Amino acid sequence: MTVVEGINKAAIPRDAATLILVDFKGKSPKILMGRRHSSHKFMPNKFVFPGGRVDPSDRKMNIASPLNQVAEDRILTRIKRPSSQKARALALAAIRETYEETGVMLGEMGLGAPPLLSGTPWEQFTSREIWPSLDSLHFVARAITPPRHSKRFDTRFFLIDAAHIAHIEEGIVGADTELTETVWIPMNEAKTLDLPSITSMVIDEISERIAGGLNPYLPVPFFHQVRNNYVREEL
Image (cartoon, rainbow, N blue to C red; front, side, top):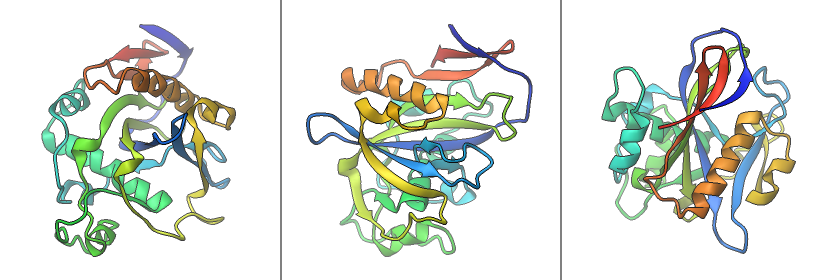
């Protein structure tokens, strides 16, 4: 167990998910990152992966395929009231938030339209006849925001090959949106951006994981508080 930094007590973290889109074409893999709006109280102007809190609709959306069993088991390790529904909702939250923040829609086409969830972002998946597919997701990290922050999240990081992009909606990113710009940047250059410390650490982790062939049995890092220190453990 490696100690990362000292921390103090704070608020209860909320379940969240984020998605790391990787374009494996070319000599160096590229990842999709977005700059958070300057008005945000939480990490303003920082470059991050798209993501956010789990929404009730994430528990209802139909899918083309379930999570890999190894990934599901890791997601449900060391949590209260583990269930397949919870793991599924976290994975779907990562896909939905990616669409909401970047316009990128991930999933399978040619299966007809999934059932409509009216009044939610999933309605756009229905109109485009896109079914989210969870077996293409890799669970690569978990991190709980240090207690010194006023907002805290228990975030699960997923990785997916950009080859699974089904559609990109234009006009989602702009000067007044949650992410004011997005960039595809070579992974080996990503740490030159203004990043939160956890994002920088996760980039190191996924670089090693990709070098290991994205083996689902590789340990999943878990960053969280233990006796007033922020530590890295493994799931």
